[in-house]
Image (cartoon, rainbow, N blue to C red; front, side):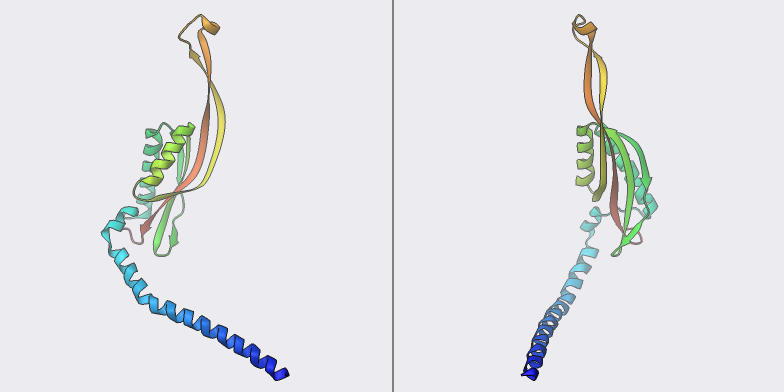
Length: 173
């Protein structure tokens, strides 16, 4: 009986190892097809539109700064600062990023983030931090007799910080 328990234990272990071996063999059999598809994607010129196409990470980061400033301004915000982040190497690609700080209304922030994320080349927004403050402004009224001719208008102003990053193929384009 004692030996029977050992035999059963080893039989189960052998069966589990055979199942694992079969899974690995199936994965190995798929490798040539996956490598072929990866090669096709790497050589597909239409894929280039998704990547930053500058010749160096520094130029790509500078272009990200220019693009962020233009998008923020075109959507009613103001770019307070932008800082180039260190380049990270990931799976054959260089991740190029900047840290952005902007001010604007809720609508300006919403539009700017949408435009940045929905256009090409593809960029990713991460580590978003938003602070809100209420701003009161005195605005002349249409009717000067009401309340001394001044109306107090309040609006919410946002200060947003976020990281904006895109990828470029190693060695540039």
